[in-house]
Image (cartoon, rainbow, N blue to C red; front, side, top):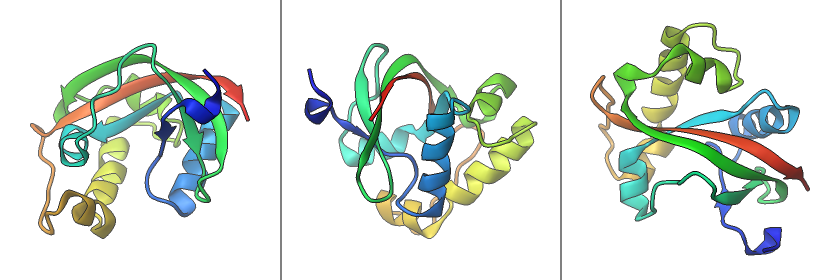
Length: 139
C-alpha cells in the first residue's frame, strides 16, 4: 500500500500547534499522543489499533511521514502516566503539566465546536486514547 492510500493522521488543528507537533514527530521526540474517546465517537471514527499505518499531515495538509501505531490504551484522563506525558515530546516534565496543557486544548473553542458542546469539560473520569506510534518513513 502506498502512502497515498493510507488514512491521514492529524495532530491538533491546523496552525502553530500542529506545526509544533509535526516537528516533534519528525525529530523523533514525539512517540505518543492523546485523544478523547468522545472525539472519535463524534466523528464516527474507529479507535486506532496496533499495526495500523497512517500519513501524518502538516497544517497545509501535506503528507510528511508515515507512522505505525504500536500501542493503544483507553484510560481515564486521571490515569495518564508520566511516561506517556514524556513521550508526547512536548517538553512535559510532570503529568500535571501534561494535564494543564491538554485541558487548555480540550477546553478550547475549536475542540468544543468539533464536539458540538460549547461547555465541554474533561474530568478525571473522561476516557482518552493513549496512542504510541513510530515513524516508518519521512515523506
